[in-house]
Picture 1 (cartoon, one colour):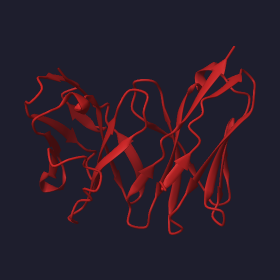
Picture 2 (cartoon, chains in turn purple, green):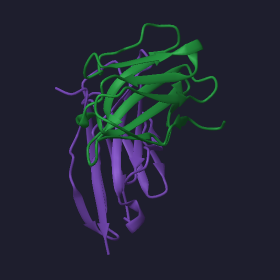
Picture 3 (cartoon, rainbow over the protein chains, first blue to last red):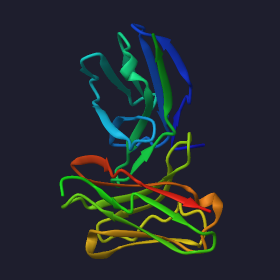
Length: 109
Length: 112
């Protein structure tokens, strides 16, 4: 079993749709959680951190469920520019970050 | 510099040759990662350096791959006797205990 697992998708949604991605992790001692975004042929970039109480940044909402060991990312009112691959990242107590394989989102007009 | 710097940005090499890829992390970042990414695929972990600790080499695919990090800063990934399946983008990232990982723009390696 992989340390961090994501549904690879692809998710194809129309503009304006709400879409949610989930990610599960195996190490219960994991300390920090993040979502990264990777555009085609570009390097991954931090989208947002995920806090225990859940957090929101504009149209993006991230949530953490430690008991079930999963994190989620919700995108509301999808834009064409949201099309990318979204990577779930889990940082362990030894400081090492582990990346999921990513979920691909395509937003269509 | 302000970000993670990788060189070269592109490298074309003949099968069987050795290559060296360089990564300059963000100053002060104690952790450094190397990943490999083939077209349309996810990140493949290669190696992780954390401060003065022994590196986590669990992701290196074969003994043709090695990496070192000198003085806790610059890192070099070496691939010996390159094969066509080594063709990919090699990404370096650095982080600290307080900061998430930042990536360089990668080195696109093509073995012909």
